[in-house]
Image (tube, rainbow, N blue to C red):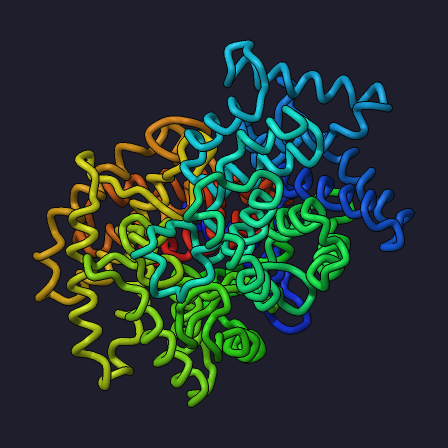
Length: 611
């Protein structure tokens, strides 16, 4: 079988499998992997509810708690720890929370006791040089590892409430205070107040901060009365941030932390608490685990439509387009200062618009309009205008595009990422011809974005990614470099701009070529295990680059080798296990069931056009 025939066959199979996963609404639901951190946090929160409020349904909660514990036991690594997903290498956050979740059961059940001891042994051997596992030691290690004091304090209160790693006043004294009182001020004041917590983490900031203030109030005579006064106001804000369904940001960890904090504060009867419990109960998966969020349906639908809607391929997309248009935010976000017009990762009510999903949705809508026989839609046009404007608002003064809204360099996810900026450039350029009213502003924004990409290119020619990572590296250079190359390829279509990006384009291309492994695939960087997703990302970018570089023979050879490897994976596997490459906030990883198919379809479609 020659390569072209093999690509055609593998592409047809991948498309068939991807289309077979579509729902009756024409969209894709996908499925995130179970998360040890999410599962442990949910188990701890539900156990505290069970202890404090038995009338909430003891039998039902105990069943869910036990199922979560059994899942944790079954998915512990051989070294006793847990990572971000099953079989991921053990890390501090997953192991600390897994160990804390086992605390109560370990007191009575021998098997749980053995698992808890194995986890403690892993922590001592890898993080504390066989020293004491105290709250003070954990606090320093978590802040150093995560770079986020609110998340570190959240993990520590889960430990303290479970009785693990220190009990009594000393444990609470060693947990860093969280400045929840700052949330009482308008969001526009946050940078001036040096509140560097992600907007979407406000629920945890408030709940954890209030719990710590009640358990171990500050002795500072100026700050203590301010915190006392802020209690009522910030608790009201917390109520407003809770959405239909009971969760916060559709996040299992955030909702668990809020519920645990409410229980620890003696507020289990507060109107916030029971909906949190119901959200967690309803979000547990059949295997007993919890994912980081119940759904990323908008993300996978946008990516799937973009991948499938290639020229010459017949795709029924009317229902998918209608569904995607319905998911656009029509009101400002609860969790950030972002205006209407963006898309988030989920269709659930607690989602928040972000630049990654807004750009992906705009590209999908444009791809449907340009490659598939879908009639012109005024609603689609209006949605595109609003989405383009939303991305304008997410661009910082340095040209980089932030995740949720403009932010200072100190704000997490506010300084901008190369992958987010590249996706935004592609969305802007795709719709440029149809939006004459914003063309001047669009061109100016693209120029600023290119300047940002030029400045953020590393000395070796690569770009780091903010949105997707790898257990070997929190910054996936294969993803970041491939996304920027795709954007620069779109920029280079205009002869007037091609020369201005030629140098960084060539440097990025050479990095990606050198990173190809002998078998034809790619990993996170030049080394490591090959994955379908990373190979597909690199292959898609190289196929686009080979066209722009006027039949670059080296790039064509790399595309042929990569396409051959990827086609082989499609042919030999009925289902492809997803790699843990996704990254939520604070580098919490996940794997998504449909990612391998989606990215393989996009890459093989590009390779077919080239070869």
